[in-house]
Image 1 (spheres, one colour):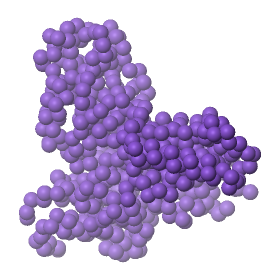
Image 2 (spheres, chains in turn blue, cyan, brown):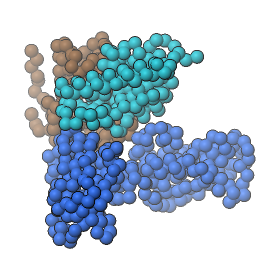
Image 3 (cartoon, chains in turn purple, yellow, brown):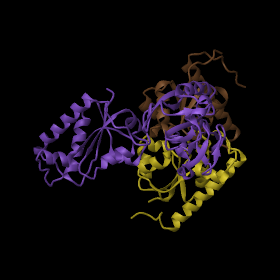
Image 4 (cartoon, one colour):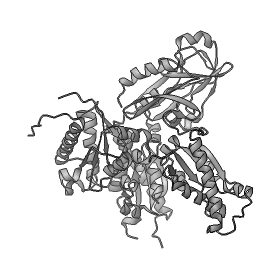
Length: 292
Length: 142
Length: 144
């Protein structure tokens, strides 16, 4: 049976609460619907549980207030549906977890109660999950945005569903409120170029016209010059791309943004821009010619 | 510990889809077979990732230098996961910053410039191995 | 020959420890670059094993051919484990013999004529498997 939720216990070995957390994880994992996540493996190999992180709501079980499992879940982009901290639950229930790292039979009913409650909640509301931070996500989600996707062969092309405008040159603009907006390249660009090696950021203060150049991204294959979707003045640049150009590949719409501009007149520029649905049609035509 | 097991394991991702994977592969072959045959050896990354017992036994606790084509870091992550002690991590894509505009070839075959990059990278790997030896990292385990 | 309609994924080992890895890789690239350029998709084995979402998604949805340098069959085992089915498994040592496949590791520019012929033979086998996966019949190839 396909797993319906992921279980990430802290597995803390040096405290009774950590051992209880582990036991809760194991009892949940005995259910067919649970996918048990090994926290050590999840920490050592980020890619190992990518699929589970993307697809399944997660039950995160911490032994104590250090919350190692919660931190790991955030780092790895798990969609946290439920969290439990064993030391808090023990306090609420008036339970003494003792000093021994070997769990006594006396703790079994307490553990079973927690397992039952977690299962009931998992079955009642499997979709209620906080969105993961930054990386990760299923093809329809990445960070805080929701995406529509188009797939060709093994390549997934994402277009944010709302909040973005596009030009036919595969660049996007995200109004941020007031007169500011961010610009960057679409998934089509980063897939076409493959690994980005260099990013050329525009200088602060640069005045750029609609369809003027506003930076470039470069891979071993080609240089792609960004065509600004709107007119404005560059007020911020994403300096992180100078040391981590791969952010453009990993997440071109969020951490891969290139510059922020103070818009001159978006209303006037808007006529020549595309919304997500319109850009998706253009993207599909381009992807039909796509061959890596 | 045998002579073979005292060698540094140079672990390449060998990614078949990108030129970076080919460069990683050729560089580790060059260093293990030409430049430092007495001090370096290769290992099939896929064997580690399919839990081959023999491969795991060899890499467990062994000093490794990983050479990944791209930022996905398949070799670095899985070398560490298998118990290797990753002394150095190299990403071929970073090396390309020093070769801006150069056409290195494809995932199938390298150009002359691509082979120069291989030679450069293999040289760097050899130096890293020498540094590890000088630091006493490769001494026989008790 | 009928136009191929369904893409086929090829998952090849590139085993660094023996010649079979180089032969596998080059034969697979031959399919991708020359023989079936628009109808094959390469799947990066390390990324596939490490959890590459796009790689695994494709292997689950499309026919797959695995190409392994030696009997350990890393590509086959990984694909079967992670995508549940393999349409065809090519093992280089079955085609060119164990001695050739398990020989010393080869740089891609260091193949002699015999080894280049081996690459062609392996590519023939992959191509035949591709045609079978597509359900098309290929005319018999005349070999000098």
